Length: 93
Image (cartoon, rainbow, N blue to C red; front, side, top):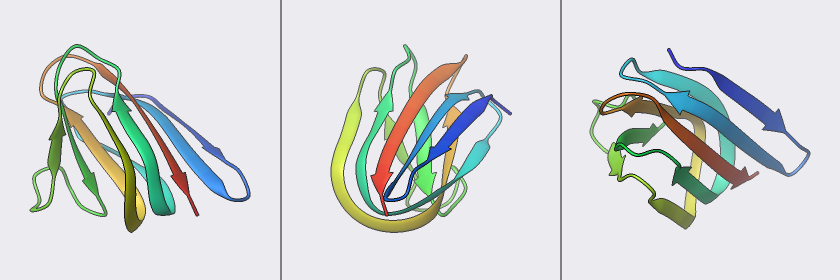
């Protein structure tokens, strides 16, 4: 599993992680996704409240950002297609 850092504030939550080819997961309790960013050079598979091979998983291309999405979730799962991929996520509670 990749390394991760989680920072929780009163009204927001962020996750910084390094996705590897082994699925990782972090608590991510939010009602609105402000953004999730793929800061790497390889694609990363993400899912909210599910495994990366479950229905509803998305692929975030290298350098891509997904932002301003209304969703309620408790966890963020991630897996790099290859290598190590730094990701960041920020949400509002």
